[in-house]
Image (cartoon, rainbow, N blue to C red):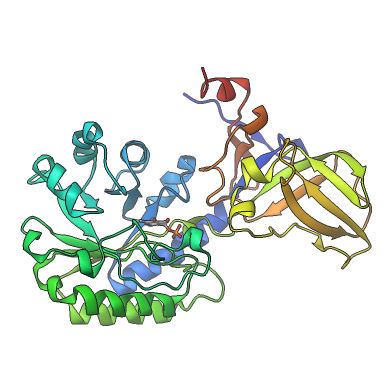
Length: 381
Ligand SMILES: Cc1ncc(COP(=O)(O)O)c(C=O)c1O
């Protein structure tokens, strides 16, 4: 069994560490459960965004299961979560597919080619769905827009072959990213216009992820109403949502330490973390994390550029200002670093992966994973 160290004081945490706060996670889960209960839908955890399996005993009290992006996530879902497993990949590998079927309650194909290649392995063993593309393009950043031009994700109306629906139980779409209910309503409108005629013969629909349900300004009541109205139109359909980000949203931070301060026209603090390796969306989106006690450059007296400990010139977390000068050894708390972080980390430059810590409701810290040289070596040869 994995050894779990318990630490009482924040100052004693290993650096860097992702620290997930159990009570904040539970608040998110309770809100998702409210949607699930009041709208009579099923909410699955999207492992691609949040796979902190030490918390799954808690998560499974509230959610119905997991959605997986392929074999490894499906195994994790089965081993650590239980409940339903729904697996979708842009393309399944033939040699992995029998195992995926054995683990999954639903499998969702991204094309008729894949359906025809693999359906003989799935019929009678799992429920089969197709991912469709509602061509509702409302995500501004192309990198995160599943419905952008030339998207490979989901079958468009023009490519939809209604003669091939014999073994199909459900339709799935994923069109959103960090959006409110108005975006779901827009996507649903297109979905029903383009594919509504096939819903009578389906058993379920899946509205994917990207619903920012746990964000403060999300219209939760609006979502419940929208889902209920959909269910009134199609009472025979089981409805699924599969958020990832909304589960891990604002549930903790990445704690890092200042290793050095250099000056080249401005003060630059080098941290024992990396935007590139530990918080890649910072560079990809791009976005700027909030830092506890800090504001944007020049809003407080002492401004620093915070940089990562890799060779990448652009490994910059951002420019921030503080009330007092930073010193070597100071701890920096980068907020909201639980979703889409530890699932994406790399060991670029051999940098140590952040430890993973759960802050329990009794305020002690459980170090659930610590990483070292072996985690770097094992991925190379
Ligand atoms: C098919 C599918 N389902 C669910 C999700 C989870 O989305 P989010 O974490 O934004 O809620 C994604 C994210 O890319 C996805 O591609």
